[in-house]
Length: 290
Length: 350
Image (tube, rainbow over all chains, first blue to last red; front, side):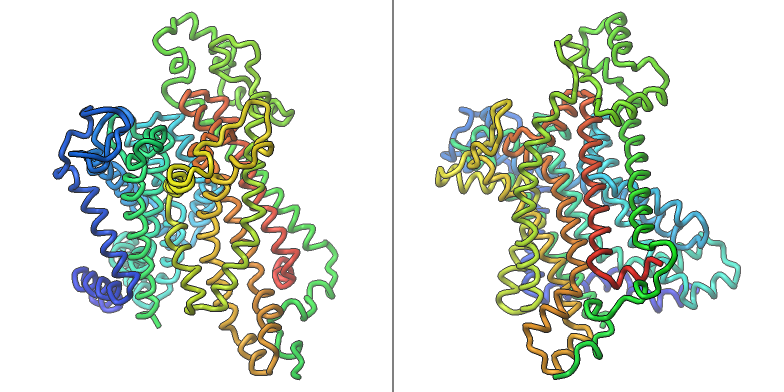
């Protein structure tokens, strides 16, 4: 029965990823997106290895403009901006990444169960999720922080709760559609346990819509995490973080604007790159679907 | 010239809605309005319970955090008693709810701890709320026509240079966090050209409208982010409508392009547009939190963030419930508007 599912489902992961990439690279905006995203992710993950100074060491006058040895100048208490920017993306990207994994694990499970149950479980789960959508996203996170404090763990859970309803809805509607297909009904008729039907027949066939949704949701997660850190209620100083750096250095934007522009540009590159790639990928899916 | 009525069964503007001629005994639209209002009230009630639970049960009771190391068991117990935290939770909730319904938002925990003369929240939240309404209102007035016009133009000229000129910037700017856009604007308009102030300070008791200059950058930041996301949706809705059979048919019938676009295109894109605008306005409710912080504009967003930082749970509660109420209100108004303005949907209510 797996062969049946595999025949209809997406191609093997490796060749699937390769054909997706070549589809993305076919458009101009996709190519630009891949380059931007690659640069930004590289800076975020490995930038720290190239940092000339320690991100927390005070090395000169606060707010010194770009000059010798400090291409982006110094920040509001005299730390090297370039070094901090190189370190600052890691927290944002990792927290958003964890939040996304948790979002699809939880939201995917909820969507699968709701879509496949054909009972009261479906409306109950979905109405429960709708409640999360009746409050602004940032407000949910702020309430979480008020209650549980501003640890990384809290940020990840709160962010994934905000991202979750949309993911669950998408998985649910895809599951509803897949559930009526012949191979799923055949598996039910054979008396397969529900869990193996869900994992072997349904899951591989909803992964397509999930992949189409992934990029935009990920960039939304990055925006939320960065915004919470900007507001000062997330990651605490002296940890270098992109959002936090923008807010810390606003006071010296007159003397060393690079302390604000630097981290802003890294975030912008990351998010715009992610959105362009996601946009190109979805277009390519639409084309191959026609 | 062909008769538009004959070919436009799907055009709700010209076809009489069957529900109206049927005249059912109970008024379906009225029932719909009541049902929506009821559902919204229930949602708001559930949200208020959740917000209340978040700000009260959870570890690190607000009082111990506010009093910090200086708190002795006696002072902690005294403050808890003054805030009513020693009562059962459901009793606290209902007395809070009762207060809200009477316009009493409770007392600031921090102000009580520092024995300030007037700890009432209602007094301190009025000005920030007004300031936010001014910022949000001005943004909304500019946002709605801008989104509709740009989105419709991009949709009508899909894949032509005009569309790219609108769509590419909106794809880029819709994605950026407000504080990045805000910081870039400050860099351009303050650091480079010294045209506008980098912060939007308002003297206590003064209206931001007396110094309109400080509103420009916050409004611009909100507009750039919100217009970007709205334009993309309006554009897609317009493209969808223009590909339908009745639009193709109207064109084949030789109806002028202008008339096709207005009577067939825009009219049928209306429901989608109202929803998009509603999402845009809902976005403003959340976006204002960050944008106010970027420019230190004394609105409800800054008020909320400061309350979160001070762990002043009663203030968080008050600001959160106000924001949630606006959020829900926009939703209902949009739902009702769609039903009143798009007769086709009315028939589905019965």
